[in-house]
Image (cartoon, rainbow, N blue to C red):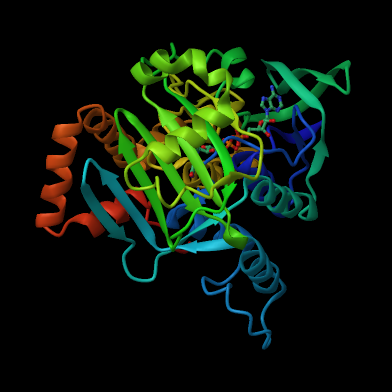
Length: 398
Ligand SMILES: Cc1cc2nc3c(=O)[nH]c(=O)nc-3n(C[C@H](O)[C@H](O)[C@H](O)COP(=O)(O)OP(=O)(O)OC[C@H]3O[C@@H](n4cnc5c(N)ncnc54)[C@H](O)[C@@H]3O)c2cc1C
């Protein structure tokens, strides 16, 4: 029997397994696929997420610098990863109908852009090196609790399997099978957005800022990646998604056309070429009633998701994994009552970000109001405060 069965090898699952295995628990990570895999994502880690990776790795905040003068192995490992695989991000710039708002993260905070399969693989390898066991091609179907543990029904390499664990962590993303089978899911929310995402080359004028171009209810996000490429993500509002749904079958054309038609990107995108297939996904609005029950807890997108616009999902996955690890380590000693209060803790931790996401979503659907708000932020010099909020510049070290 495992101490903890972690379902899902995304950032939430790998970060949680890494922490638990390092603390000496017997941990398995079951993933429905064979990691690493591409995941539809804007591929930018906000400063809060970057700080959480540094804490997870047990490294120093300045790990990017390459001085090898007596650096710890953790610093060297993270330093190599950052230098070779990530692009620093210092803030974002938002364009909407001729108004531009640039917001830099406050002093000393920065984020990174990183290809998701590279990030996910790095986190997974950290968990495996700490002693976690990977069960690849193992889809969890349901979880049943009994007095002294949980039984998960799974299909592993095409064969029905049963996995026993004292505790189960559902880190299995948006449409979490663990949340569903533990009765934790709420009814899906009203937002029915869709997104198309791909890597492109040949986009001119990239720098250290994530770009957001808001036009006619849709948003194009651009994140500069290592090696001169960029992540381009087109998120369509519910109404826009319904309107252009028929043409979405031709994803590459739909994505490139929207880049070329954007007033601020058009000329810069004249030489843009797709570097990867175009992934489509949505909708995203999947709340949960609560994030734990008995011996089961949820983390990352499985614990409730609303919208990708503010780019806070990886932060939530990694910060949620810290909180979940604290609870599970306590539960290993004190039993299931240690999980009580976890849902409330998560809710409080992410309350400000969740409210902000809803305000931004409300405004983004009303362009005139949105532009007035942007002008107001510019006039009052509040852009950096907003950047700090959206960037989750809160917990630097623990
Ligand atoms: C279009 C888009 C753009 C985004 N852009 C950003 C961004 O720029 N920055 C940011 O911070 N966030 C962004 N996000 C959000 C971010 O991608 C997610 O919040 C993050 O991936 C959550 O990590 P996770 O580990 O919870 O879930 P996931 O990354 O989804 O990982 C879940 C894992 O569980 C596995 N799994 C699923 N079902 C099962 C099962 N039944 N059994 C076993 N395994 C299973 C999957 O194979 C997967 O490996 C974006 C999201 C979208 C949709």
